[in-house]
Image (cartoon, rainbow, N blue to C red; front, side):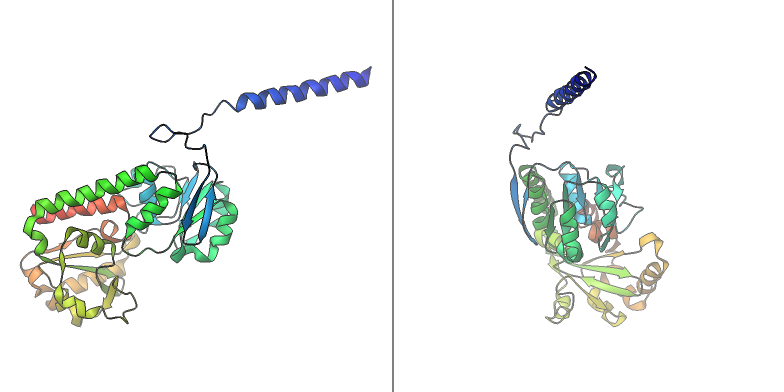
Length: 329
């Protein structure tokens, strides 16, 4: 009799667990996309820099390992559970920090924290081959991992990949269409001002660069139709180690920084005094002061985060706002 009572108790307990399990299946409805379709109804496949990855359902816990990717997620309405720290800011760029409250820092682009990533239990990781190829297999063992190829100029291609990885292709198209319309509207406002030559210069600790057509700002200038400083074309030879992204120069090249309008910015993380000193030294040099852009008041200091390091769609729109201000004020 005693054994029978124990058996009855066990059967009752199992029945309760089964009943609870059945009830839980209806508690959380499947996520839906903006069109009202069931966003988790089917798996989908994404081709990327490391191969092909199948994602079983629309991810909810996403970790992003590039700065421009962080902006892509935010623009798509997705708040990551973890992200690499911004190159400038503590820990996020000023222009995104209000949207990143509660997001965990998982290292920096070139050195991600695998243990912290695993602890966040992501269901999707998005990274970049140029930055994290060496740890792809470890990341992919934690969660399905999708990599973009590179981080040079054309951020739109990466954005399209990220939208597909998030099962947000339609919303992604809208974000890019909105940006292209922003460009079109600004171009119409600028009129023949786009025929002016522009030059872009960056100062860093102990070195200076001219940025060119394959840079973040360069792609935007090209879309707007601006001309680049003609005398700079000779600098970007096939053996330049940075290609058409940028070239490191000495002070003797300052005259070639000239243009109708010159924009310059300084990469000074945490107030890096060496970088600030480099900028001060160069902009006080007689060769700099003799530039036509400087003498005519058409040399503008702009944000390194917006014009270069953030590299995403949010910064791209803010750069357009800057250009409207400088050209049409």
